[in-house]
Image 1 (tube, one colour):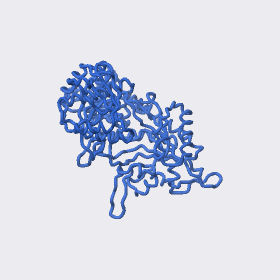
Image 2 (cartoon, helix red, strand yellow):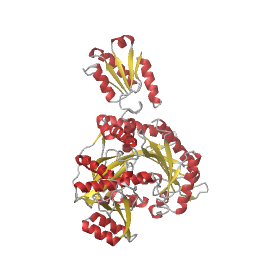
Image 3 (tube, helix red, strand yellow):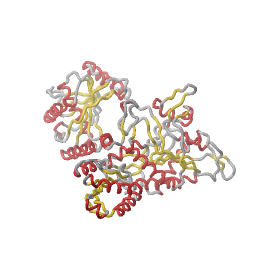
Image 4 (spheres, helix red, strand yellow):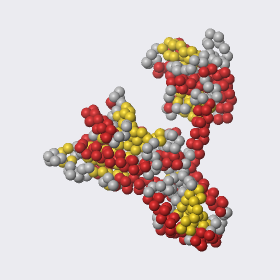
Length: 588
């Protein structure tokens, strides 16, 4: 975020707090930082609803028009505590208690000249970073958006506060463009479209964060899994299957028990206690360990799409993007050091082919995610192994011409990784595919193979994910395509639409020919008007509608309506069947 824009947004947060105090003088101020696209401020002891935002925004504009200067002072922590104690500002006192551990001075920012004590004067605890005066704030380039609840300091044992979010930009045009973007994003919200297109649902009886996929949603999941599996098999991958629970000691050995802590879901049995698996890699190590391995056996490539589980906090669960039951496209390769580059390159080829089939390849960038040297305790394994792994991944990224950006602190706990960052149709970036190099877990589990000299040696483990979590990936695809999936992925690919009931039998014959060819086809034979049938098909975002009436029946044809191109005229039934089968095979 440009410094000037961050200062603008942070200054708006101060003005928001000042405006809220006008209407809610007993409100207790929390924090008010600048964030992506805007700002927020937290308030205790204030019942503020969406209906109140208009008057607060109006008051903010009034404050801005006064041209009040932002002036920072350094106060002794004791002086600041005395001031806020008199105000009854317990959240500010809490913050000062943290700040004075680092410095006995704290920042205090005036909005308005304190010597003049004008009506608009406002004082807040702040490190600074503001515009010079409220007259430097673009009054026509901000908007208060919504009210939400937030625990103080993000701790659910603390007070629940009222958080007001706003957006802010340097110009009115940028604000208008952002609001248009938000409107489009709302139309594409996967929770909304998932319900409209009958793809998934949730049940209070099942539990939050546990999505239930309908027939149509399952078709999409199965097609994605088939695509990943078919491509992976070309590079020697072999499917395996593992249980959903394990003894806790498995994850203590791998290091995941400490990493996930309270997120581990416990299973208390009559005879033994278990843990719902939070990851799959430890199970896969035990398949490898089930027999003696030779260098001639390597590389061994396991793939699996299976569920794993996290005991997420209720407030963090939302739609398909944050769930408790996570279906993961997982893969683990056990190989020698000499085989690493070739295996990593092949994973890169799988990633490229898969994302080309979705039209997402090309508008992406790659991260080389390495350790944060300031927090070595956050990672497991020996530093020399980390050094080797990071150097090798850097070489691989260069050989694959990935133009990877090195980012510290984003490595997995057991090793560095190459992360592929893809953009959706709204310009949002998401990390999806990944290649992770792990020298550590095989050592923790004592995995070995017999090398050419007849000696035991530890294999290297490469973790790979092509699409990651199916739930999250489906949410991204639903929003990227706005529900209008590519033909090969669409739950319903073709609808046959008779113009009236007397052409239903002809339509059913066409539907049967399509189904026999492996096309997901159905007939819209309800006693409705043709216009309503077509509108229904368009609402369901069908790739193809085939209109059939007297003329089409006599000629053995169909009138083709393409979702993107509109009416394409008539063609022979056999010709259309051949065409659509070819397009599906080519991932159109």
